[in-house]
Amino acid sequence: MHKITSSYNFFNIKYYDKFISEAINEGYSFMTLKEFYTKKPDNLKIFILRHDLDQKPHSLENMLNVERKYNIKSTIFVRPLAKEYNVYGYDTFKMLINAQKEGYEIGLHTSFIEFSIINKLDPIKVMETELNILRNYFDILGVTPHRDINYMYNSLPELEKSWSIIKNKFGLIYQGYDKLLFERFIYINEGFNPHLCWRNKTPEQAIKMKQSIYLNTHSHWWFKDHAFEH
Image (tube, rainbow, N blue to C red):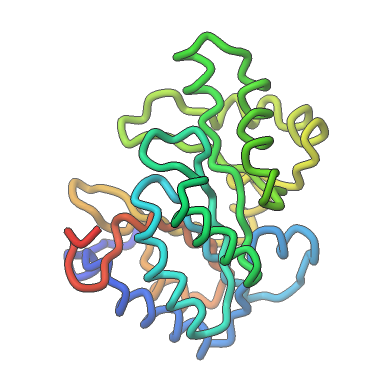
């Protein structure tokens, strides 16, 4: 277990730029989750950037601009049933549809268990609704569960249990917590301990290990000028 010090608790865009540049210099190949599952690369050093768009969607623009600078693409999971934002809000939709046109992948950040429990609905029907909302304009081939910070209504166990049915019924090719990803990659994400930090390793530590990296970020925690700008 690597000790994470407070010096890593600076989730600003310059830092994001810094470790992406470092990974490029170390010979990492960047790709979306869809590309990983469709191309099945044998590369030793793959870097997958995943963004879970939980809230404040336009906070993502700063991170996308860094990726555009280096001509790399990421996977963006969006919440069609979120109360925090509307996927079809004018500016949010424009940001997402333009990203897809540029080669970014849009995926479903599902709340199907949470929504079905609260509203006493069939969970599979809820997921179908989420996919239909997005697939009017977005090419959705991947799904990953959203779980609120209070850890209520975890959709992952049900997603894993019903994955064969869900995958075949809705034409999906992967879910974001597939065991294959954790076998092939070092998984890195932010968390609280007790304040915002990296949960296990930092990106820099993983890069030095020269293994493939699966990085999951939440853009509302990242900032350009200060932590309260969004």
